[in-house]
Image (tube, rainbow, N blue to C red):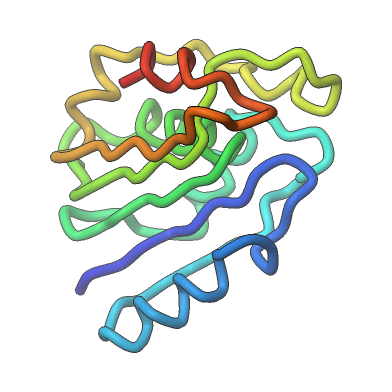
Amino acid sequence: MKNAIIFHGTEGSPRGNWFQWLKRELTKKGWKVWAPKLPDPNKPKASKDAKYVLEKWKLNSESVLIAHSSGCAVVLGVLSLLPKDIVINKCILVSVFTESEWEANSDLFDIKFDFAKIKNKAKEFVFIHSDNDPYVPLKQAEDLA
């Protein structure tokens, strides 16, 4: 069964931005969708959030991970921790970044990402980013892509 997880960013929730709209649209198409409230949205840690997700949701070859902002770091954490035999379908990363000076994100990158492993844990990666995002420089998304 097609399934998706939608990840919010720092100081966010599953009720913000376009998350509930996307959840409704995918559900209408028969997808199983989860938009969790991550454990500590005001001071996220990618490792803690990734472990939480992997305890609550079974990923498979039809899974799609969709994330906004710091939720993208959680996706990278999830991919880093996936068992060897699991490769998901797709990751859609919106406003992804690799470093942040914002105090709320000071503990976000508490896991060393193995990008050689990560790139082989999804069949496809999609990056969506604005060239005038006031919070996240386009260069970080380009470098990660």
